[in-house]
Figure 1 (spheres, rainbow, N blue to C red):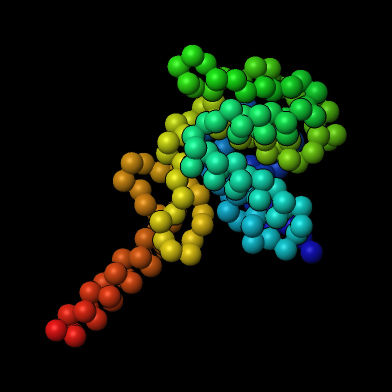
Figure 2: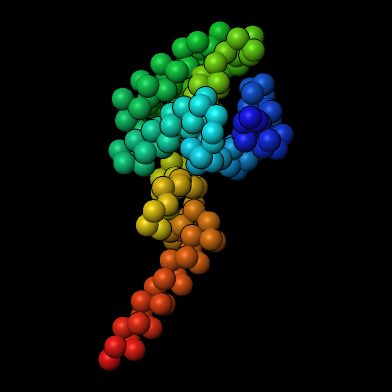
Length: 174
């Protein structure tokens, strides 16, 4: 059975080849969220494991911010890279990356590539904009503005329609 992640656009291919430097931050965020959210529903065991790893990091980031434990765990996954990438906190609390490219990409595990992508995101985005969907039953993560509440229009519509139905039902009972 084909892995659904392999059917994703050229970004997935670039992740597999670790050619992420030339991509926009927005497309990197979309790719990481795709791995975290869509991979969980895959029938492919490796994809589920990668998704679980990405979701675990997102959950920790969402709940505790950039903690030393999170950086330690990401650095552990980054350790197989030939030219290691190590995350450290600056005096101001932001994250910087020490080290750069990796070589022999084919020899590196996909978990290390996901860790590399996560490291790029920690370095380049405002992590306070990573949120978890507020719709009951949806556990997806997304990158959104201050007022964003849902991961997609579908979830937003679902919440608004259910809220309206609840209000209509209460009005009928009066």
